[in-house]
Length: 479
Image 1 (cartoon, rainbow, N blue to C red):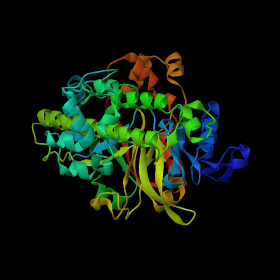
Image 2 (image 1 turned 135 degrees about the vertical axis):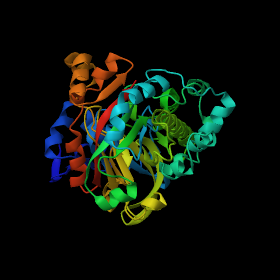
Image 3 (image 1 turned 60 degrees about the horizontal axis):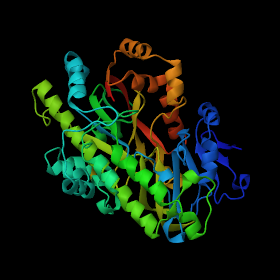
Image 4 (image 1 turned 180 degrees about the vertical axis):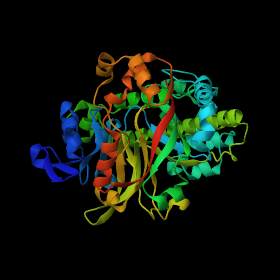
């Protein structure tokens, strides 16, 4: 089914399925391509190519694996003016699950005596695990303000500064948010979950920059060899999950109402410009804003912990945000299609934005080099900071991978490994870990994921992003 275009690009011709409106494309090395045949992700990629209004390609990144409706690692853009749809399956349940990374002036020599205390303090002060209640107690009125303002709400309440907003995708706020588009159940789930990490693959990780690939770009990003960074990965928690669940049910009748068919009920969708599509998009924006506020608040808490343990201000420690990216989201963006600039609804499901130098939507400080692209590994392997390219704009709507991507399901990982094995292996590597449950440790074993080095090499080989720095984990906090 897959035809090799080049060493890092594979294509599915649209004649494979008579309902495909565009070809399918997978960006992957030969070494990784075999992994995608173990699940239904290729079938899902073909199904996505059948969506009304889809343009150019149904895309998948090298971290692709089976998801709900769309493959995780999937990207699809639909023509808003041409009847293009918006689909909850193209965004996912954890709306605006994303990553942010913060630099510091610290080195390994500074960190080592305090690493255990730091990891334990983060674990004890930041709520982790399934459910979980944060330190912020909101009423419905204040929650709706947060849903409208996003990360700015957290900054206004003392958890950050304007530099943080400037270095967050979309400045941490999507203006089309409408809190009234959320159900009472979604609102209720969000009241006590701001300032929580969650479970699964969410984490807080203390890292060391162990290799610089591009000195010029690294300087723009504030990166140096041997420097200590903090990476944070979480999303919109139960509120975002409920939004997705609500609108999957809400849209069930939309295909018949608007006269189109879908190949998989998990791809339920509505025309973007329809009342249902607009209502869902407003709810997605609100949930995305909740996630940005959550990451901003958590970063503020992490800064406070560093200040107490190092007995120094966040400013003197150089604890500044490098960037924050979303990787489960739909955005309205303008891209060139068949020689014409068109307004598109770009779905990124387990995929990260990667805009090039000069793009209007990246911070002024990065205009000369391009947007930082954050690609986390798992708790025992490297993470990367990359930079967006012009080829990504031409080929993938400015999108790249969001991480390593699973090769084993969570249940398969539990059958294969024990928590003690994994903890022992991490300790041998000098990695300190704190987690709420043994189940999470087993589910997130390095062996359950693809090789992050090969994934990022595939992205770079395809010309979608370029490596800037590699980081090694030192301390990990998980739910």
